[in-house]
Amino acid sequence: MAVFRWGQTFDAFRDLEREVDRLMRSLTLEGFRIGRPFPAVNLYELTDEILITAELPGVSADDLELSVANGLLTMSVSRGESEAVPEERFRRSERPVGHWERTFSLPQKVCDDEMSAELNHGVLKLHLPKAAAEEPRAIPVTEADG
Image 1 (cartoon, rainbow, N blue to C red):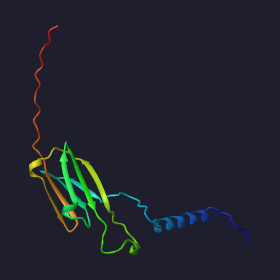
Image 2: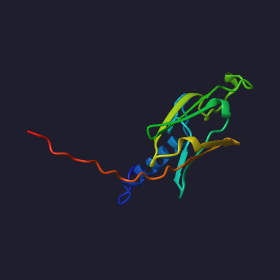
Image 3: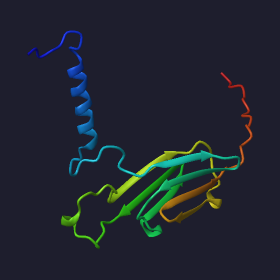
Image 4: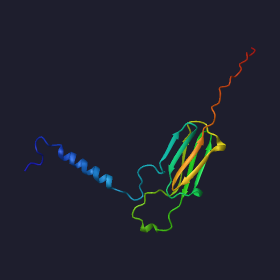
């Protein structure tokens, strides 16, 4: 019996590729995380504010630190491991633990004294009111002697 059939020589390779893809999708490696090490963040530019939302399951307001300086927003979280279940009992752990920090460049200057943040059921909403646009200022030019 022939190993390859005429006209269908690459079908076996396509089947192999499909099976390897299926295997790789179902494969999980202990301690190896594919993707980002911190939760997803959405940044919206609204009419009079910049709204940032982040999914932070299991994070309390005490674990979260937010700061704005020089047009950069820094978000950092220290999340400890759950003491309720011992580590040897875990069969799957996908929520990151430990410390992470993320910095975003803000698209516009914001009012530092009017910022607010709320954490509700693991979803952070950060309201950053836009600062009034500064008018361009003319710089006087003088003739130099010499």
